[in-house]
Image (cartoon, rainbow, N blue to C red; front, top):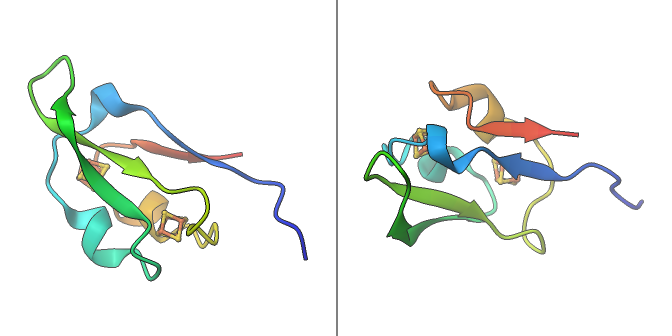
Length: 68
Ligand code: SF4
Ligand code: SF4
């Protein structure tokens, strides 16, 4: 089956709490070395590893993720 959805991140909303990293079943999320406009190291999704399960979307308190 081919996935059509992609996980997008609104990096400027991220506060680098790491919650999504802990909940991702595929270790597809990593923290960037770079900081966003608020000074937090935002997260990045590895598209190759991501299975579009939506866990990150559900746990992020700051609505960083969008799956579409
Ligand atoms: S959708 Fe699932 S697999 Fe993809 S980054 Fe989010 S938690 Fe990880
Ligand atoms: S849970 Fe949300 S705010 Fe926390 S690190 Fe992940 S994307 Fe950033």
